[in-house]
Amino acid sequence: MRLFRSLQHWLTGHGMRLQVADFVPKTPPLRQWAETFPWTALVAAIDRSFAPRFPKDSTRGRPRVSPRVLLALELLKHEVGASDEAICHRLRTDFAVMYACGIEAVQVDGSQEHLVLPETLAQFRQRLDEALIDERLAIQAAAAMEEGLVSPAHLLVDPFPSEQGSQRVTDATTLYKAQKKSATSSRPSRRPAPRKRLR
Amino acid sequence: MRRFGRQCRGQGKILVTVVRQTEQQLLQLGSPIAALAQAAQPGLQRVTHLAEPQRDRLAKQLQAAMEAHHAISTQSRRLTQGKRLHHCKIVHAYDGTIAPILKGKSNCPAQFGRKPGLLSEPTTGFIFALRVPPGNPSDPSYVLPMLDKAQGAINRVSRPRRLAIHSVAGDLGVNDAALREALHARGILTVGIPQTVAPIPPSPTQEEVCESLTAAGLHRKRTPHQVHLAFACGYSRPVVESHIASLLARGAGHIRYKGLQGAGVQIGMTVIAHNGAAMVRIRQLQLSKRAQKFRRLLGLRHRKINQINTSKN
Image: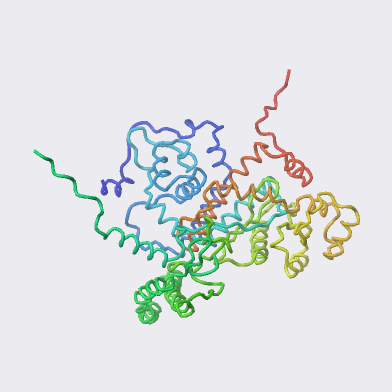
C-alpha cells in the first residue's frame, strides 16, 4: 500500500477524459467561492517565494504536485472545516473540490494523477511563512479593490484570543497528572477475586 | 491566570516541586544544546554547497534552539514559592511565543495562546490585514503594522482611482494618545476610537464634525462627508463580533499548527478563505441594509449578476 501511495503520481488511467467543469453547476457555493481568488497571482507569489528558499538541485524524482492544487486544498480545508486526510480524500471523488483545485480533466478509468497525499499538504504548509501569507492577503485585497467590491476607506481594528493546541496549563501540570495516573494504576486492585464455582 | 501552576479558580495551588522536577528534566535534556550549537555555527558558515537563504534558515533554527533553552533556564531561577512570575513567562516548553491571553480567568477554556489582530471593512467583513504577534502585546501596537500592510495592498491596485485609508475605528483598548497622533500624521481620522465608555454618535452635528477635524488637524485633507462616514462606521461590537465569529466558525479559535509560524499560516489561510466567502456575499448582494447603504455612500459598484437583463414583455 505504501509503495502504491508513493507511486500514485505515475499511475494514469485510460479511457475518456471527463471535463470537470461539466459536472459542477454554476450555483454551488464552492465553485463561486473558488472563482473569487486571483489564482495566477497567488501561485506566482508562491513560486517567487519558494524558488530561492527551496532550490531544486536535481531534475530527478517524481513531478511535483502543482502549488495551485496544494494552495486550493489548504484554503478549502479551512473553508469546509475538514482535516488534511478528509480534504485529500474529497479530492478523489468530489468534482467541486477538483474544480476548486483547478483540475480541468480526469481520466474515466481509475486515474490517480490528481491525488494528493496528506503528507504532501503538510510539507507544503511547512514552507509557508509570514511574509508569503501577507503577500497573498495583499494580492487578494488588491484584486477585490480593483474589481470595486471593497474599499479601504474606513477600517476596523480588533484583536481576538485564539487558544493554542492543548490547554493543559503547564508542562508541570501534565507531569503531575501523569504521575497521579500512574500512581493510581499501579495500586493493587480492590475488586475481590471472582468466586470459585462450586461443583 | 495569576500564578504558575494554578489549575482552577479558588485554591491557588502552586506546584513548585513538580515544576522543579519538570524543569530539571528539561534542563538536563537541553544542557548539551549550547555546546553543540556553538560547534555547529562555524560549521554552518563553512558549508559552501548550501544556498544563502537555506543557510539563513538553518542558522535561524539553530539560534531558536539556543534561545529556547536559555529562556527555560532563566525562568527556572525566578520561580519561588508563592511569588508571582514576571509578565513574559513561559507557559509552554516547546514554544516561547505562547502567552496567557485571558487574564484573571484561569477556568476559562482559552488560557494560553495567541491574539491575532484583524483590520477589516466594517460593512462586508473583508479583512485587509492580519497580524499574529508573539506573546500578548498591547492592542495599540497592532494598528500601525496592520495599516502598513493594508497600504501595501492599496499600492498594488493598478487602476487610476485613488484609494486611501480615511479612518480607523477600534474599541477602548486601542485608545492611545501616541497612536492617535501617529494616525493623524498619516491623515487618518480617529473618531471611531472611543475615548470613554460612552457610545459614539452615529450621526454627528456640524460642530462635532468641525471639532474632530480641528482636533486631528485634517481640515484640508478630510472632508466633512468623510467624517460623517467615519462616525457612522464607528466601532460597533456586534459588527466586529460577526467578523470574528465567521473566523471562529472556520476554526481560528483553536490553533492546531505548531509554533508562531504555524499559527500565522493557520490564521492567514482562514482569513483568505473568509475573504473569498465575503466576496461571494458581495457579488450576490447578500448584505445587510446597513452595509448596502454604506456601500452606496462609498460609491462602490452595484452589480446584479444574478438578474437576467432581458425584456420583461
